[in-house]
Image (cartoon, rainbow, N blue to C red; front, side):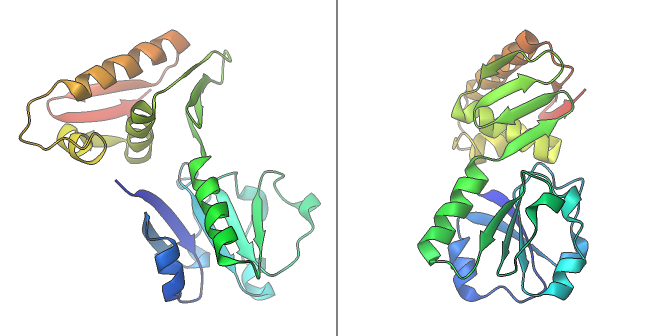
Length: 200
């Protein structure tokens, strides 16, 4: 399953950028539509071409999940310290590797839990444990979408055909729930018929 990637730019995205981001499910948007709240658990790339575009952005409200690509210079003391920049021009391979590194090391926060790589932490009591890659993908998807069909997760995350009978998803969910109980988090994964949801 492709990861989602939000790209904010007022210019048409060139074909080479489409090929650069071919591993992602792209969501192309204008700079004016930057969502400072609901996109915080997804990777976001902002492409700025001039000073006029730059003045329309509230840099203080951009969190770690935003990467800014620009040729402009910024005084970093006035910005969120964790905000990442790519200064252009830049070799294409370096750009590709930087974006890959950025999307793979995305920190996700949902109520009292934080996920950094495969480490899940309860922000209230600092207890933590580690998720497997599959557990991480399931949890990330549920946090992003809030609700999902079991069949979708089986097919797109576990790569199991819908007509195959297996308890693989239930086993993964049991392990995720045990880990979350151990952390004493308020976040719960609920099952209702063939639907999964994540709540507090």
